[in-house]
Image (cartoon, rainbow, N blue to C red):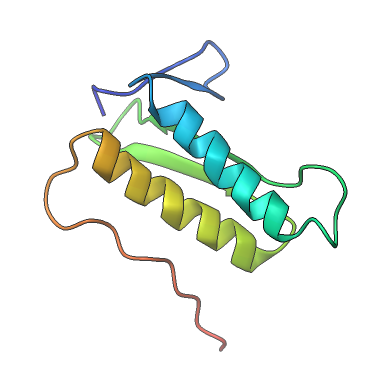
Length: 98
């Protein structure tokens, strides 16, 4: 968590410098995949270090739950890769249909 720095509103990562462009690319890819359905960007994702735990918070919004889950999974994988994650990389979010 100490590697990640955000802007004042905690909606953009400013360090490491390659994290925010990677998150932006993930959001664009999700929106482009749905371009036939929506004309405007409909996804949003940001990360921030926890203020109370040794953790990083991942926030993801999209027009569908599956899109939000996909974006959150990709953000977690990017965090692990670009910020020196320890241990196994995070697994994709899989929702139960129950």
